[in-house]
Image (cartoon, rainbow, N blue to C red; front, top):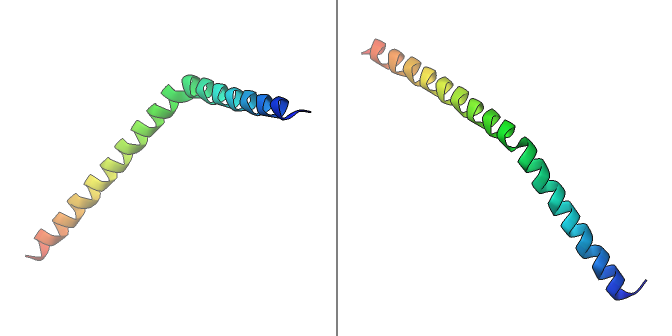
Length: 62
């Protein structure tokens, strides 16, 4: 094995891994984006509920 052969193999492996990552992102990107959006909406809803509960308790003490 020559140095040039090792460099070529390294470069090809790098390109192949990049291609696989890009393909997976293209295939599963919309699904993961939807999961992210649903998760953020769920967290925001929970935060709003907690804030409402805290405000309710604070106004109840006054």
